[in-house]
Length: 437
Image (cartoon, rainbow, N blue to C red; front, side):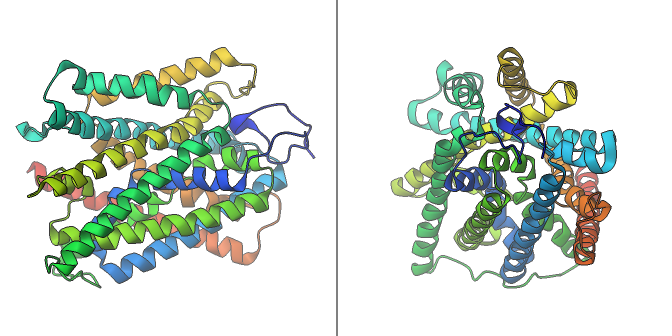
């Protein structure tokens, strides 16, 4: 048993025997679900168009099962070695190189997501101008174009009055209510899409979705591997496993919370996938939010489009603090490996918080197209966090607690992740090279 330590947040030991106020399983479910859903929900319908309904459903279930196994690996070795963070867990197996690898992947994945979220929020509220084409935001559509609803000011207002109060919480459990609202907003988005799709279906305005993919040429085949990582990365929340699990205190409680969340998120993903596909058919974009950005032929349709866009923007605002939580912890652990962030270190905590907020804001304002870069890097680093690192931990087995089956599963996870990511990266590079030429 490790010595009791009076620390908070992501630094709370999962086996700390000190009497502390434990988090609730329901709060953990909301926090895990919010960490999972993020922005991935918008790309799921397009993957159904590429993969077909049946393969997409099978892949969603398969990835959810593998994620559950990978988290179980993490929890088992965490409790065996009493490590407090993901980086610490990797350091136990692979030394300093392992811990730095995790920290870099978290920095790439989470910081990239924070920037992407702010870009999307800015697009929804204040519009954008891709290729010279003006797309008005909801605020501009409602009130006209003014200085106070420009992109820079709208994001600054959001940062100061919505995001800042949430990112200053020291315990991830404190975000359970905002996470519950975030999940509710995701359900609102799914509900509206479902109603619109059913209405279109009754009016005979929908196309029959493809049950299996149509492989017309080699490009269509490679598109399958390009779409698959979307679902894989859509279930990545491993950077928050220790932060959330540490406050629960019991591995069994975290396991229950993770499984409930995976079932909930799998249902949300498949529901939005099938109804989004029914609603827009083959015209569906890689980001379904773009489809809702297009004009509607009725006042009610325009209102529903605005509600969908706003609910999604507010959903991302409430996901932001959870990603910032683990990003801040890993950045601190990377910069100060021998000085863990304690509850009394308010200056360092506030400094890191403001640095991350300012950098993400400036990047979202100055480089509105940088999300392509982070989407490319983030999908790769997320695969490492979700499957490659947990699989490697099970294979390394520094505590001698992995069975032969565990090692086979771990190796399989690594091989599948590497193959899928390699083909996806190659396909993206080939696609970008084709567009450039």
